[in-house]
Image (cartoon, rainbow, N blue to C red):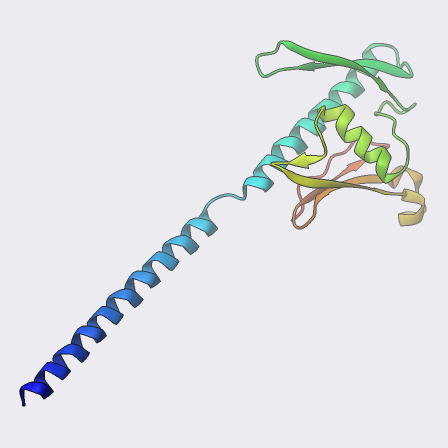
Length: 170
């Protein structure tokens, strides 16, 4: 009888240990899922900041172009967060007052670097620049766009001839 009781006690102890492990694992997985889903997507937040900077810089270039009498190029001045000048470089402009680019994906990549003064990446992830010809899209040259996207997920578009920057699209 004692052998039987000892065997039952061992089985009960193993069962209790198994229940503790299952509950603990479930709690850990629940916390991981909760914190992963509730924390913002860092790449998307970083991209949103770059989208805002891109839009602000192209708009500033447009107003500078108008203020200087609509020249074919301007000296784009970059300012830091404190309002101090951090750089300047020439920027070719179209007759409509927006930064000029070669109508190719490479031209869109060069525009990114000229406007943001950054490599084509977000938080260490490669960005892709793509050019879409407005004539092929909708038979309207003014509808041409540069699309900037991560390999998966969010992207934004810049309308080449109107200067409009779209919000991030997931």
